[in-house]
Each structure stands twice: as structure tokens, then as C-alpha cells.
Length: 209
Image (cartoon, rainbow, N blue to C red; front, top):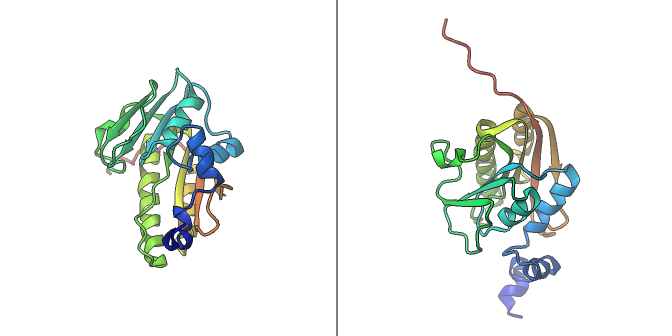
């Protein structure tokens, strides 16, 4: 093993990486979603799912299997997806966080909105946390607009000083908020997932006086 790989745990193949490859998933992140799904009963047959920042495609593949042929997944990312798109899924290459992107509404309203997005890390922990918080809020804004009442949201975020504000933002939109750190998260990582359950109905703005 090279010294670079020895120093960087993200370059090493652990048991989750090996299992993902054996099961046909492009990334080990699939097991994070699998655990979240198991713990909060997230995905069911017939659901409509929006997968924000979907590349390399593991969450899209897992969700498409769980929702079955009567469900639909819309996967969106600026990067292409190398894996074949399932019959009940559509991949759109574009900005997953643009509320002006009409393609995001393809299967709306959604039962579940997923976001495994993270910023390109710089080594500056505070800066990375800040960018992660901003990404999280933008994904939550998409969920607020496009998820149906009673729907759910899963968003990745780096633990930091903005974390309490992220929790408050989820509670504003959803009846229940939960913070989960799946077993598949690397020991050196400070990421976790905030889950919103039971989306509150949108309240239309009051007409001008």
C-alpha cells in the first residue's frame, strides 16, 4: 500500500467498499441510505423520490429497488452517472439545487427528497462546515418546495457550529427531526444526516393589504 493511501483512509477499501462492489453499487454510501431507510422506514413501494447530487448513483439504484416498478426516482447531478439508469428512474444532468430548474418537478410532489451532497473539502474544517451548511439549506429549500405534505427529507451535513441552526431549519419544515450517523460513516468523518419526517403543509403568503 502506498504511503498516500495509508495516510488517507478515504482511499482504502474497507468492508463497506468491498460489499458495495460485490452488490453492484458504485459507492459505499449506499449502506448509509440503507441504514437510514431501515431506522426511519423511509422508502416504500410506489413512492416518488428526488435524489439531489446523485452521482455516482448508489442512492438512485437503492431507492429505485425499494420503490419498485410503480414508483419513480428523479436523480440530478452536475456530474454524469456511469451506472445504467433503472427503468423507474430518470437522470438529469444539471443543477440539483436550482429551484428554477423545471426538470426537478418531473415527478413532484415527492414522497422523499434525498441529498448526499458535500462540498469539495479544503482541509479548513470551519470553511468546509460552512459550505456544507449552505448546501444543506439549499437542499432543504428544494424539499420544502417539492416534497408533498407528510413527505420526508434526508440531508448530509458536516457537524459544526451551524448544526443547531440546521436542526431548527428542519423542524420549521417538518413535524419530526432526527440526526443519524450511520455505521457506514468513516470514523474520521464528521458528517451525519439530518432527517425530516412529516412535512408540514406550505402556508401561502398573506395577500397584500
